[in-house]
Image (cartoon, rainbow, N blue to C red; front, top):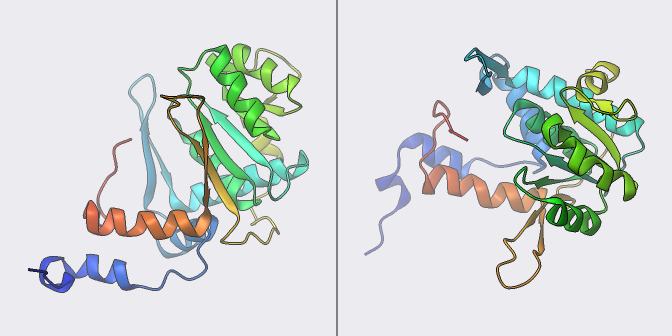
Length: 231
């Protein structure tokens, strides 16, 4: 027997499922959240000393704009790739949104990878920029250099030729980048585990990602606006 969604789901879930998505780019979604709930925390993290740090939706939107402008200044254009390697941290999210706002695609590289795995993914992606945490920079950055990618280091840079993430943000601008990103543009390339052969890059467009994740979070996981996602 089937049951109508309105009989099983809270009203907030029903509204989230049926509300029009509008132009479905991931950058647009962040902009809408920054306007509708600017002071609400988007990311809460804890520093190594236990200090709690919160980044609001307005701050995340503004900081990702600054990073987007830094990418444009380094020649990144629509259709280029931005690879990010490092442990979970706020800078990764800023880089993610900044890349998507200029029409570039994002791809994460595991900080647990060795030289062979890093080289394979970078050579396969051919990213325009590698954003890498300082603890992985000496291993990954030379591979990116050899592949022609620009290197931006989160934290202290072991090589003065590589730009620090902090300085990249400082040179950027708060306004939205003037790039017309299409909802069918590639948003990310996610790699399979490569159990039977070399990992394969799975291409995901902006609209496909939003259309698939919105129902999964609202109906499948029953996530509501005040819920917290532990990552």
